[in-house]
Amino acid sequence: TTGGSPRGESFAYLERLGHRIETPVPSLFTFNIASPALRGLMGTVVDPALVGIPGTKFRHSGALLVTHWGMSGPAILKLSSHAARFIQEKAYRFPIFVNWTNDPHSETVTGILQNMAQRHPQKKISGLRPYDLPARLWHYLIGKSGIAPDRKWNELGHKGLCKLADTLCNDRYDVDGRSTFREEFVTCGGVSLESVYRQTLESKTCPGLYFAGEVLDIDGVTGGFNFQAAWTTAYTVARAIAENAVQKQPVP
Image (cartoon, rainbow, N blue to C red; front, side, top):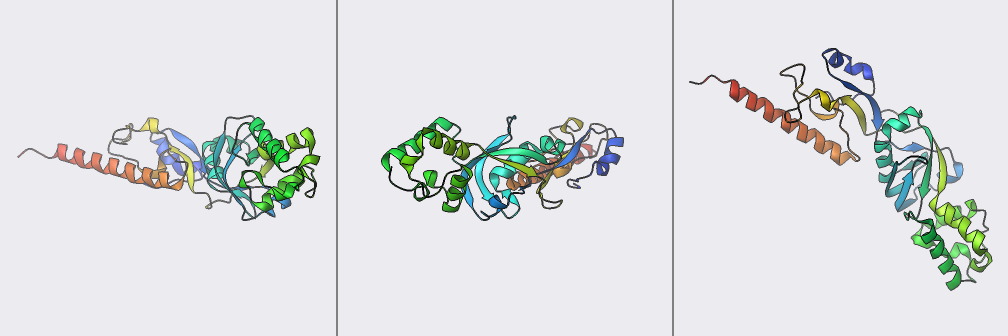
């Protein structure tokens, strides 16, 4: 029960004993994004938002928090967990997209914007916020779409509405690093589950040696699942050791 480790050398002695070691990499971390305009929205929360990595199947939905260093929140943490190895291979520099509406169909978003334009043609774009987006974020996205905030809805036209919908659904950013060591929550990697018996978590190569907790190659998408994994594997090991001790007791 030694816990996880960010360095593969920490598992060298276990590898020498015949265990397969999955290279440890950080998991559940926040994203650094060097965008002063975005960081100016520090404290903004959108729940839910959809985030993903273009060109991959990695995407997650949940609350997203804009911080003074970039992005955090459950959506980002879940994405970092499932894409931990991919992100590590990219040296923590990769693009992401944010769908602030959480609606995967841009046509639906465009339709909602068109409806707003038809119902409130004379109102300023900045005064009506779709999806109850925070005011600061809405003004930021309008500007990012190249639209003056004092323009009226009926002045946008189809091209302008599509541009605004694209910004809402496919807002791109470049991630430039992650939260520093010891700020991430868990480590992905460790003793492979192929090296232990699933029912007891006893080593297949070293009888009497058991593993529990983050030393194993298990990690969850939030902290609660990782706590549960630690407690459950500890219970499994304790029960196996106790049952093994009883079986070895001499019969009177």
